[in-house]
Image (cartoon, rainbow, N blue to C red; front, side, top):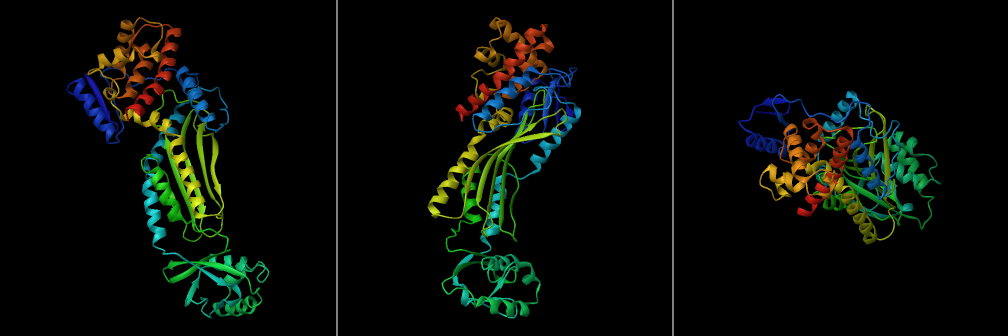
Length: 444
């Protein structure tokens, strides 16, 4: 008899096969689900809190090398790498994971942000600075009728003419409109006859308004264009994270994050979150930036977190639109694919039935195939190894690739093995994960 637990509620399937089907269906729908043999304890870690886990060490060393190969260096943990976290660490990990699950997929945020920007119907107007005139109601006249001036737009315009309005942005924005107009018009007449600027306007609740003043050399490549490129790159990534466009500043912030789901012997040194960040501003307030980041647990309670990062793009709003578009597309493609193997390892193994990558029709046949993999070379006769793996699977039943890896870690729970042999199986479980992940990728 088996116990199937879905979202914390236990139920008893009629047999193992029906339980496995229900387990897989629940996981596919995003529920937290496990199955174990009745009377058997819940899945057991290989070591106690504070002890060094061979499974964790193998995983940490492999992930560290993978990130180093991509130019991302991480700070060392303050405890020995592989030291299993305490219960508080597990609780914080679950909280972190739940917070990630509660975030929308990055592609959803990109769609909403794109709509937000496009509604503004932005237009740019090159003007002669000396010919600008401010009306007593605070609007500006430059041949397009009366156009409102946002606070940020006023400060931007005055900043571009600092010799006429030194440090005047905040002061002028606080004046009554008619007084502001009087001072503006008196000073703006002193501008050089050849000086020209580009006024960036958009539709606002009160009508069209100026949100920025930029130089003629400024290359407009606004948030909607950036979002379109990022959307093409990230649409199938499964990344989650906030996407925001600040209406006042025009700052664009895009976060695409992956988070590990379940980690055997979660430990000091484990990388548990990674992703990409994109930043830009449409008011000449900063360059376009993109970077890749990884988050690592440094302690035993998942409170002290270290990060490593790699710059993917830093591009000012200068040069040709074609060049900027090419650079951004390259950075977006890199960001989308940089951590695909981690995402595969963390998520797809739990969502992929073992039968999708093995030819066997039942768990016995699949274990026979798996025992032939080089990662499973633990110095034991193949028929004996299969029996041991099946025994481990009884303790960690399931039909996914992740369940197979867990079964290898659980071999010692149903077989009499010494510590040396136990360590071999733990190391084999660590080696097996990337092998299974690569099979999923190959099948796809």
